[in-house]
Image (cartoon, rainbow, N blue to C red; front, side, top):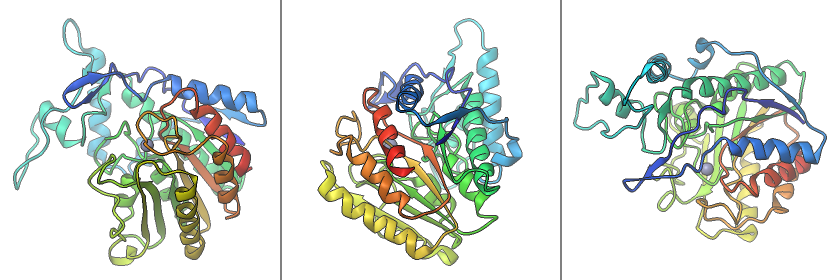
Length: 339
Ligand SMILES: [Zn+2]
């Protein structure tokens, strides 16, 4: 498999994330990428390459230019900070009232972010740009027919990022960037198999009939991102019927997951896309610290083989997965089944 790396991820290493008012160690850390790369090198059969840097205009195909500017300028401001000024910015107040106005930095932090898990550091913009660059390079390879399957090995992840908000450790939405690019050539299906709902792609393509969004995830009544991902969210306007959410309960094992995956694959087949984008999360694994599902490592090969049956040119983007001992084997097994 051709693997496109984010060369700028490492310096984005938040000092923690805020959970229930407390700063706790980050689940989303640089070692995630390292252990996955090591597992793929051990498995063999993969080539690794770095992408050219993409333009901000290319990211603005799905993200608000004001949001892109905010991330760039905030990271630059943090790098310039001296003395006791914190080297990280967390939002503390979010928009409220009928006509919220965001005039200064403290308001913008809440304007452009929807949770307390996704801080901005001096290196955050470069890391996010690196992930977008890797994703768009993968899209170009598939668009040109140079490669039929490409895996984007990147962090921070992307699938929770919305048009003008970061959240869920995500800043730019890699899967959506790829889907938007490939949609110029034909219909695209996004199949999100992270344990968390792919809210970013759902909302970005909710009114479009040329991009199908399917997500298999834990019931948002009890799992992040809480506010979306329900079964009755089916799209609107031209996009009516082009959004499918398949919910599973905490403790989901192979017996429950397999039929949901098959239903998702059926939805993709019915849509008859020219391309597939696959946001992949290993946080469905039984040993993941935050997912709550019970999938064993060998099942990931079966998942890969099931997706391969679609026979579509595919870009897979690395999303979640937070147990450093298992995420490498999970993606290695998945790609083994997929190739
Ligand atoms: Zn996740």
